[in-house]
Amino acid sequence: MTIAIIGAGTLGTALAHEFASRGHETRVISRGTPHGELPHSVGHVQADARDAQALADALGNATIALQTSQPPYPKWGDEFPALQRSVIAAAAATGAKIVLADNLYMYGSGDGGTITDDTAETPISAKGEVRKAMADEALAAHAEGRVQLALTRPSNYVGAGYELTRTLLTDRARAGKAMQVLGRLNQPHSFSYVPDVARAMADIALADDAYGRAWILPAMEPVTQRELCDALWTGVGQEGPAKVQALRGRGARAIGLFNPMVRASIEMLYEWDEPFVVRARDFEQRFGWTATPFAEAAAETAAGQLA
Image (cartoon, rainbow, N blue to C red; front, side):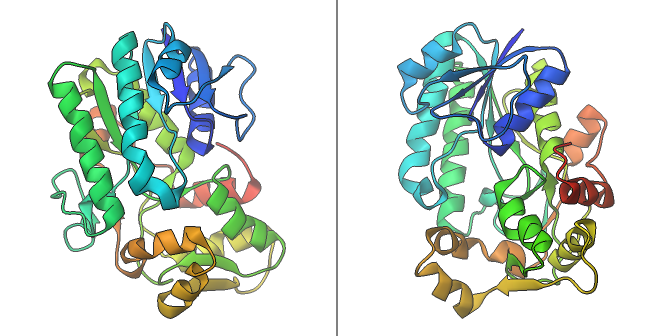
């Protein structure tokens, strides 16, 4: 079995390590060089996923493709649907099964702040509308028999290899600077640990009965952003209360005037200003495992370990 991973960012790199550890022939496809170090057994092919023919050539004889690439966050609305169509077309042309890295935006704020497999898809943001339309289109391609496809939906990432964790939290904590977060510090939030996401995507990719649907992936038991920052602050060796800067309301909007990433994130503040709890019941029942405990994930993240 040959595995192709489209995208060489945080998740793509974690998937490369996951499949290599399972002994599968694996290659990563990306426009540029990988963001992280790939296992020696994993190959790398340069191709633009926006070009369906070039991507199909790069997929070659791959049995399964996992799509993790994405446009810059501020350009999701303009560029993401076309990128996904290109990926699905390439997989259809080569006969590869495909697992798409999705997210939870289409659920809005969930049912009373909790998202489960039964939660209605009622997005309350422009990005949520985009992700729902993309997911509907992808599942239609599966239903029509054009491609075998599954979607995977983690919560917000945390992990040593994740750029936002590193730049906004652990790097700043090591320097004794205030860690930066969006929204309130005191609301319960379910984070997805990047190695768990890679493990779950691999399990789904290798299970013949997992295709044709979206899967909510295991997320850690909810903690507040204050608790996350406290754990990372202590984990990197700092003493005393953690320094944290929470960006909200007018402050976030003011920074957004000069920072495109912050500006693009403002519509998603509801995830951080209210409880955001995730339950992956279907996945846990089918695959038999739950997320890494928070204390373990926080310690590994602070130490800079990828898994």
